[in-house]
Length: 403
Ligand code: ASP
Ligand code: MG
Image (cartoon, rainbow, N blue to C red; front, side, top):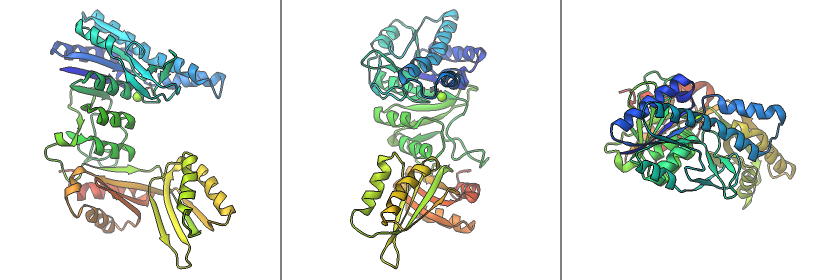
């Protein structure tokens, strides 16, 4: 098999852990696999480099930032390569450039445009283990770029896709994807398998284990992803296409997003184009809208309620104020004390009554639902934040995820 193994910051957090990673990589190689390793910087290193830069400037040049930040990954890639060599395994350490990762020119959050894995392929042919510095690439001008924070997951998935690897293993300090946050519901169970789409819903809804962009890329390139821990031999969770999951459960997980706020607009002038005007202006200002509800009031005006990330409230208020000034919105209110709970599962595509069970679970727990939205594989509800944990536990039990 050809395996790409990515080790995150905590897995390479000190020299002892790098030695542990070297052992693990060597085991995969000894088992007869071709192995490409992608590493993050030692945990805390990238933040430290950001702070160093901020000592001199609150707005440092982005090209220089990329040169600076990419160095953390080079340290771990070289050290791991040296360790493996010493153990008798021929290796090559590569920067993003050598690994053929070509990006656009957007410094500090560059997008991968193509991968030319020539150097990797020929080193693999020579029987070597490749150790790639994650999180970085090179643009058309030959400048170093980085892929955005957490971007070494993306490096690993992109390389796995380009090499058509059999497996891309992402090692962190968490043992896999759980049916819900185990800190809220200790009965949460680790999932063996989950589809890309479910993972995307669970991630964007707050169950952060993997960078969302890398799941999207895995889906696009058809890369079988496994998330697992480097601290034990425990099996992880496979993230794969839906067809590979024979018996999909009705519901795979319950996600919680506390980072939502609700904005209510009252007395909105009822004319064609008003929603377009408001939401276009919000979009231009980079404000991420999630749920939207519009209802008609008795006086002929309308009410529009929508949710945004808490961090976007201030910008959203400025946009809203501009419509209040023109008289097209009469009144507004903002509520940060809400959260979104979501029931996610591909199995619900072919089953009736999944949403009804979510609503009756809220009713049984005396929790009022503020807003509802559904998709083929998800039911989301906005509720008061103080009921977040009660709701998650109630839903987890109702769909028998602890069984
Ligand atoms: N070291 C980078 C970061 O901290 C990239 C990564 O860890 O994936 O964001
Ligand atoms: Mg990381």
